[in-house]
Image 1 (cartoon, rainbow, N blue to C red):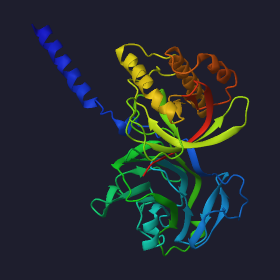
Image 2: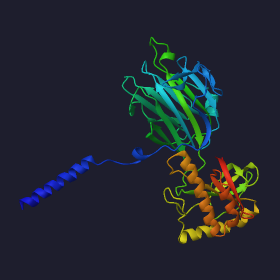
Image 3: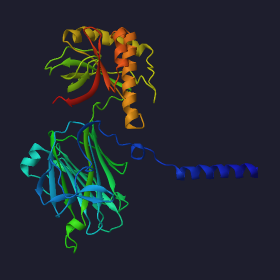
Image 4: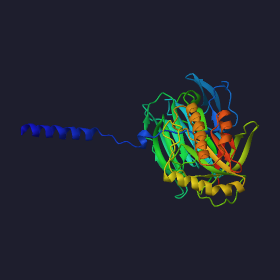
Length: 415
């Protein structure tokens, strides 16, 4: 009897201990930053001479130069409150990455702003707005930590929303920090050194047309600001070739119509959203050319690929119905002179090279599977396989079932 009581007490103790040590596991612990794959602007300064400036950046106030620190080169402000601005047409979904180092003296700050045209008309790069995104990366007022402060503009409420307050997250000082913003599907995520620290809804009131940085710090310090600055490097701004919400993954199929189509035929195997696009097509045996057109995303029943695999797993009634919907749409696509675009998804690859190879192989594998379903001419597919030189996707020409390799793809969602 006593033995059973002791066992129950031990079991209860283990349960209580396990409950005490249980951890909540969610996106804050597991989310990973996904950099855009269509580069809009990239600058690492490695080839820029010391003391030079970088072409394309407008100096709104103050001055800066390229300087060397910690064996790398940086934007170094020469005056406090230096402001630089760059015009850039942002797509609806995009990522922004940069590296900063914050000097300890007098609380160095680096501010990032993302602007609409109206923001710049109202006040050209004001110190605290107006802008759609207002991000500060700063040295703490007590020099034992660095911090971030994020505000976004809410057009519905017509006011700014504090998403991350200055004291809520603290980071190890005296080291470079990797900062990243990811905007996809109306949501903005902020990452610091690979950790997600914020997730919020974000729908700017108009397209973003510029990015700006302000270099600042506390005043009243005996050192000139150039000797205690916030430093900036590794800027990368990119869009995404894959629309958000396509959770099935593996491949992303689209109906393609040449030119900017105002009206489209009724399609059964497609989503309602459309995208403007341009594709660099590598015609086998011919010259590479760019084709402008309209893409309509096609729904998949499920992801046809297991992680790290290129074998198509598409069986059962749902996939049979999917093939029938494609065949039902083919006559309208053929009449419009269009085709079927298959973009590979290599997002589960570990390196950029692996991701591109996986994307290419999956696009080919899915095109071959469709050819077995009489969508595309399997005899012509072999030439694309032989000539494959890093394609991210394939287009099946509806008229004759021929194939064209897609070397690059740029998308912009229709307004």
